[in-house]
Amino acid sequence: MFWKISSKSPAAVARKSRATHVLPAHRSTHLVPCELVPWLLAAALLLGLTMLTLALTVHADSGSVANGEAVLTNKLPADANDFARDFFHREVEAQTQDHSLWSYRELRREDGKLKSLCVYQTKKGEIERLVAIDGHPLSGDALATEDERIQEMISDPAQMRQRQKKQREDGEQARKLLRMFPDAFHFQYDGTQEATVRLRFSPNPKFHPPDHASQVFHHMEGTVLVDTEQRRLAAINGRLTSEVKFFGGIFGHLAKGGTFNVEQKEVAPRVWQVVTMRVHMSGKALFFKTIDVQEDETYSDFRSVPDNTSLEQAAQRLKNERDSTQTLARN
Image 1 (spheres, rainbow, N blue to C red):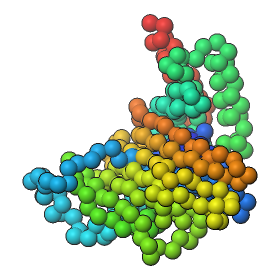
Image 2: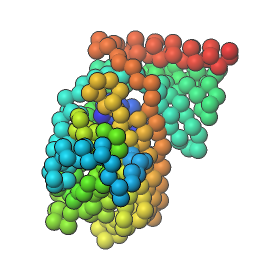
Image 3: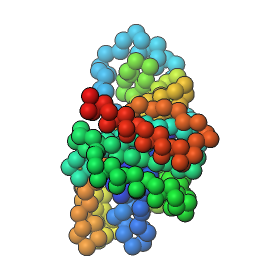
Image 4: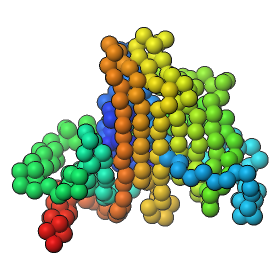
């Protein structure tokens, strides 16, 4: 689920609530109207990318074809573009139909510090608790501050509804960009890795972007890793091959060389979640404001959450998790 992006992205500008559903409330995206700050379309883009992009870190040798690779590729359409259109369609459909709830751990590098959080999803919203900084568990006033913050949040229905609304918007933005991918790029087979196939993508010069965010597609190239059995996106890795100028550079730009990397894994039968997300982009915005999006986040220890879990129950379970962490640290 890519909309984990909630907390994640543009991220920094935007964060999701995982609910890769794949991505926590701290992730809610805050986009600026494009007519005022086109450069933040970078945020819209990064938001979508971080939700829809998965990081590719394997580079199989495409010069030699093993027997297993030959068998795998023989089952695929001859045209990589047809295969890409099929799996992107399946990815969007799978995300749309997945309403599962999860608790998980998140490691996030923020303001030069490595923060460890526990996150709990419910139908009423998502709650996260900071449990450690740079490997040191919170204690004293910091714990009390977290308790107070969480209690205030779950006691404010309007705030929770607003967070959920933003998460839904983030998810739809991600799916919108995913749907454009098969038209925005040309794809070529680029080897296999176990039960996955790697495709390389480059801009399709005939693609006409329907909005400013998708214009960035003309400046990107990269690779996607696809699980061939389920036709799910396992990873995506992309980079800006040229400078992206907004309104001729008047409103800012994104520098060449920016990268995004995301990895997604199956955490339960046919349920996929983002487990790694990295976004590194820089540039200049309106009035020479620096754009510096440096996102490094990992997610682990996924556990299914019952549909009838309340916010109060989620908060209590996070507190219990905190107490267990403190006990382990003392021992």
